[in-house]
Length: 188
Ligand SMILES: *[C@@H]1O[C@H](CO)[C@@H](O)[C@H](O)[C@H]1NC(C)=O
Ligand SMILES: *[C@@H]1O[C@H](CO)[C@@H](O)[C@H](O)[C@H]1NC(C)=O
Ligand SMILES: *[C@@H]1O[C@H](CO)[C@@H](O)[C@H](O)[C@H]1NC(C)=O
Ligand SMILES: *[C@@H]1O[C@H](CO)[C@@H](O)[C@H](O)[C@H]1NC(C)=O
Image 1 (spheres, helix red, strand yellow):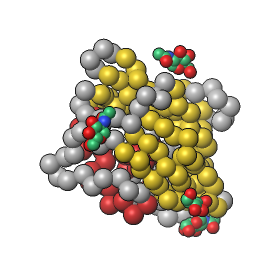
Image 2 (cartoon, protein in one colour):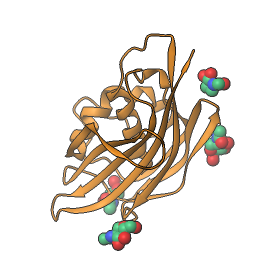
Image 3 (cartoon, helix red, strand yellow):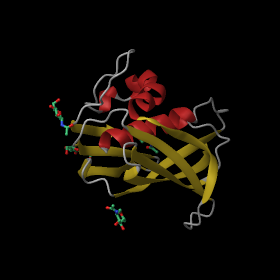
């Protein structure tokens, strides 16, 4: 899950990426993650999101991917927002539609992997792709995203990213994870 959370986090950041106008800035605060039903696939017991300073949260620790992930599995991310931060979530139209896992990695992650290869031991994904994505222990050390890549048009609130992994051979949702991120804006 470590690898997946990292991939998603960066994919999300880059999906949203656009230049800001310099007067305001977005502050992205990882709140927590929750995972259901993924224990045959991931071990996240030693993976944490922690506050580094007021405006930055980092991912630190080791996550174990227990199986090779290939295109048998689809991977997708949905977004919902709670404007008041009170856990009343409304679906947001943007999403990273479910795609076969290796395609997802190649489409949303590969071009931007240099941004965080320095914080992790995730495998390098070459231009021709990496399939399957290999099982293994992946560490992250103070991995973070620069909030300045998030455009100011993205509304404030508590955001919930729903990350689903589905086995296409039997339609089983093998893992669902929620990542909660608080987005606020402040004057620079
Ligand atoms: C998936 O997780 C939910 C919530 O923890 C649990 O109620 C359900 O029984 C689990 N399903 C399977 C197939 O493990
Ligand atoms: C938090 O730490 C980051 C990375 O060292 C730094 O760029 C940023 O300015 C810090 N923020 C505050 C409010 O100190
Ligand atoms: C990150 O994890 C490493 C290894 O567990 C630990 O030594 C380090 O202090 C952690 N970093 C922070 C900022 O807590
Ligand atoms: C884990 O990786 C090893 C080495 O590449 C491979 O032989 C094995 O089949 C993989 N296990 C699973 C469950 O994918």
